[in-house]
Length: 340
Image (cartoon, rainbow, N blue to C red; front, side, top):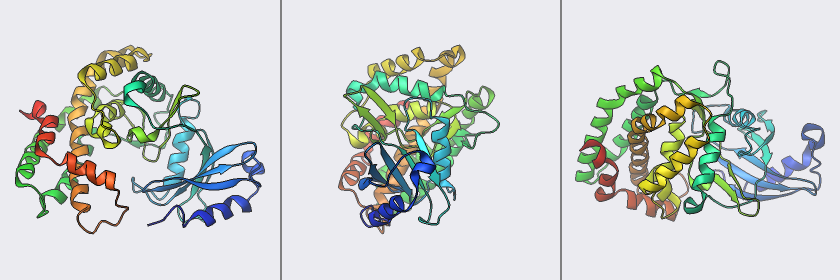
């Protein structure tokens, strides 16, 4: 697996060898390049020059089975460039001459992760801004959610098979998740609601707290990770954001009913479309069980993988969270209100 420190000499050489002033309008010949953050699919370097600070994002894999992963992300950021809540993209290089799978430059945004307890209202405004960005329906490059619930169900089916087939699986959890999967199979036809009454927009699909940058000095909030956006219903992001499997991933916060109601009300207040305001609750009600199923299915798969021949980086915090999620009592708090 690519390592951010091992790739640092290549990143520095790449920044030093090109005339960036003619390509982007920035003079980077005195820029310092330092590791910023490493994900499973991208390595991010901070490029600091006297007049500008940028992020060099080096792609090392794909979650969407695309050979043009870095260009896909760059074009999404272009769509969002005027939203005011996403990083502005400056340049993409998909030539593969210097890196195997391409790179992009985007604005560097200083700050820290989202704080659920203090940032819910601002997050609601952010989502409303993103979801109301005009996206050409017939000509955008985004992967489309034609059958949104079936798409999630099919993914969950495969993820759960990894857990069901493992000797490590708890028999009670296996049985209970089997019931949940059966419920999801029987009810996914409700996706006809979205097909009959589409309200499509660009959705991020990965709205974990760590993918936000909150700048307390400026009072700003940005959503920065756009490697797998879709063209689909806004409830994809809203349900994911409110899910306890999302909020508890990096924090100890679990959204109370009152907090969720406040967040959704704040989001609705920022919407210009009366029809979306009127139908949002029903759209959320249909979507949320499948978002929960996707989260617990991925966690069950990860719980097994972490105890086997896992090829990725083993993060102790991730392992602790997976163990917390793979408890029957916790899983029941997610699905008993739905299937019982």
